[in-house]
Amino acid sequence: MQVAVYAPATSANLSVGFDLLGLAVKRVDGEMLGDIVIVADFKEGDTSLVESSLPAVAFYGKGKFIGKLGNDPDKNLVFAAYKLFKAELDKLNLKVKPLSLTLYKNMPVGSGLGSSSSSSVAALVALNKFHGEPLGKNAMLTLMGELEGLVSGSPHYDNVAPAYLGGLQLMLPAAYPRYQGAPAEPVMVDEQQQTELTVSLPVFSQWIWVLAYPGIVVKTEDARRILPNSYSRREIIAQSSFMAGFVHALYFGDDELAANCLHDYVAEPYRVQLLPNYQELSALLYQAGAKACGISGSGPTYYALTDNYETAEKLRQVFAEHYLQNEEGFIHICETDFDGARVLSEAELERFLREQG
Ligand code: HSE
Image 1 (spheres, rainbow, N blue to C red):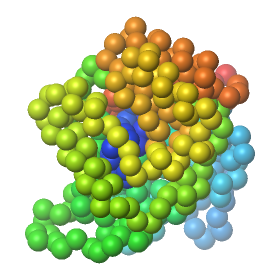
Image 2: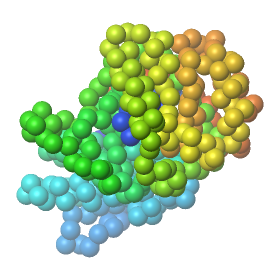
Image 3: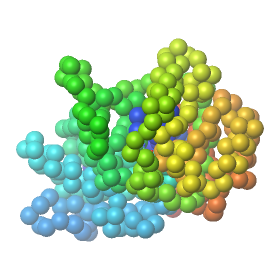
Image 4: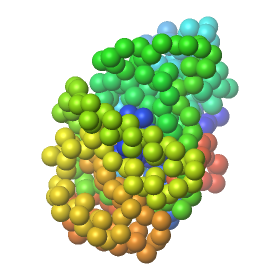
């Protein structure tokens, strides 16, 4: 038996919702933009990574961006996901089956497109399916948040939630107490109402996101370290106003207002120093017709928003001429991925493996 799961790339923050908003994206040309994890029965010839008294587990790393991760299980999140999943099953008095994990790393690490989330979400969903889905949505999200914390220094859900559930996800207050350094735990008025970690927001189907990865690495941990620990009242009021305006505009179907609310006082002013050519870039994107633009996640991928393909092509051109730094860089025209993590059909997997060569 085997299960192959694809988890899409994600763009976190959307400028206005630092650590609170995350969007799952898919390429409009139909090509995959996300990692795949295959969980299969442990077979003869597989080498187990754990002592023989434990259920056998093998790991294989493949794909265009496996690069420095290689076959070292300690250098990526798939094996960490396995260990967390096994510990969770132990708590339920359930056993993991002997298995192999194969990661196809199709996303560059440190890109701002939720590369680590794509791996960990694909791994956990594949492991859960392989074992008959013993873990529910919140248990899965909690494990995913913990894995994200391993990479970035503090658990946050704005990449894992959309990679898992699809669409545009808003983190709810129940997601807060896990944050390190949160000023105070919110008072739980009604425990039952506070258990959901995230909720799906409506999103405009005409919105097109042009996403440009310049080809350089920015570690999330580093991009978080440079942020201030506190903000002024003026900044808090401005950010809250734009965030509230954005959510209001989504529900009222006002796409102009929603796009005009995509402003960032929390991260972008401090992170632009990590991006090449920033000043010139944003001015050129607006000149080319972008409705909004900003850093995707913790960068260096930059997004530009439009509602038509003609402008999307112009934005692609601006990025190509002013943002790409090397051969590793890429630009993709994307729309919302409403599916999130999904099991690949045999035909899809066969096609993918054929293309891998
Ligand atoms: N909200 C996170 C950040 C996303 O901007 O640091 C990166 O994982």
